[in-house]
Image (tube, rainbow, N blue to C red; front, side, top):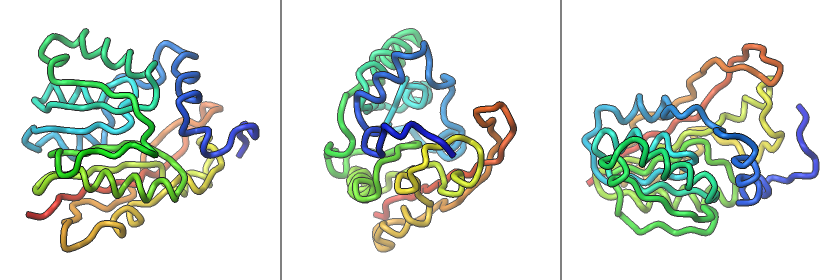
Length: 218
């Protein structure tokens, strides 16, 4: 698998990388909420949510449409400007339930025990940063609240889907679950579901996600 050898794994976490990617096109993402979010959260009573790596805002807007008050975080102010504009387009009620914050997730520390839902989809940082980040995200969940972490599975590197060839960035659901204290957390889902995608040549390929959904006891 090929990639830009001028980049390293930390570059893929930077504001410069993501601002350039968002500036390169009118829309990077589909505008639809992540399907694992919809699957896992549709029947959950709304509260305060943290959408980590919110991008152009589709997940946060979907949550707000279901009554959640959502803080969206992203490293890219370009993405956040789009997210805020799309929330405004969705109406005053949605805009009023969403707020947006630019931050480097590798150094940011959320308030402890603050959120009913912390959701992070496809946030890939080097393993040493990931362990710290996931620990901080878990600490931000209040008692009875939920942690939902979804990522690209390492097995994707064995396909033609076109992932950057940095194995250190990818993770399994079991790795996320293993870092949670079983006295504090009930694991609801620890799975590696497959889905169909197209590779850069337009060929169908089966890829796998890492999905961890846990609830803080108490």
